[in-house]
Image 1 (tube, one colour):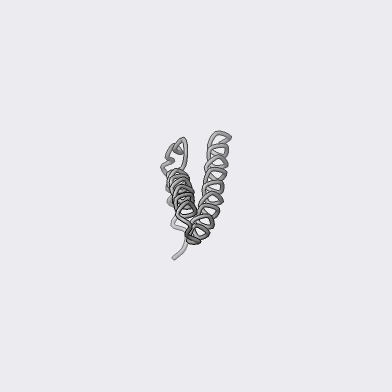
Image 2: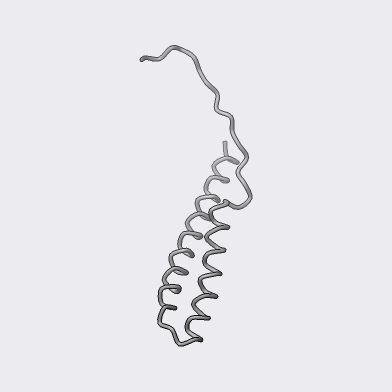
Length: 78
């Protein structure tokens, strides 16, 4: 209920060189661009959905890369 006086030390993990989610979103971005090219080449307007998915996944990749870079810089400075 209250502070028992016990201090726990957190085990720190080394951050990975590139966050795994960033790699996944980069892969989704590349695949959705390829799907958009194929869809537009076949004359399908479904390619618009693939382009939107590529934009979303590229933004997510950018976010996770920047977040990983910030975590690395914080762990180095501590």
